Length: 281
Image 1 (cartoon, helix red, strand yellow):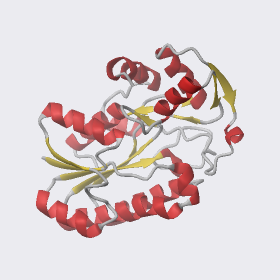
Image 2: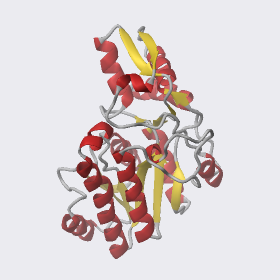
Image 3: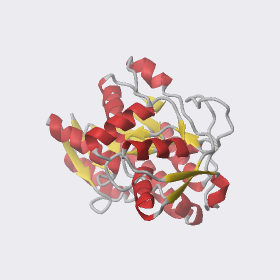
């Protein structure tokens, strides 16, 4: 089995690379600089040359607020780029793994979101990711789309890295107490993705750690584990006046994938402890 990874510099791709290195799995990682998914000809040429069995798409434009002001950037990567991958995978009969987001939902449901719930994104980023899903579903039969949320791991592209920076520079931190989702580790995503591939699953699934938290709860738990003593003020989402509107409740259920794979996905706080201890995030 040969894997081709797009977006190799991102935190999720790096987690795949670390796993593949330890497992002696054949793979080829490509960064945005080496291959831009928006360039269909280059995507086709690389696939022709390497002949992968599976493409793992970790490339994404995830600057949520910037996407609101410059939506063409988000749509070019998250929609056009994904469409290019779908076209290529169809032509060469390659299995595609793609990652979407909890931001396809509007936050109005008073329960866990399931795969059967209708999306209704509140911002341009969410719209661009939802359109990417649409193109895959309408192009391919052999694919896996995983909606993930509040992803963190080794690297600088996540909320916890920013939280560390804020804590180093400020004596008091304002964190939203009315924004809820599921903190999800890159390790969990990689483990479940590979289990799903091994069992031959196809389709769309919600892939998160278990349980849920507010950003405030997540921040408090993380800084406690890091033994960082800071005053964390419970602010409201509206206090930050950000360009892009976020869903206040984007908690997704992982029961479907857990049941199919017959696996227990760790609670977000249990996984966080392991990630802090074992990976020093």
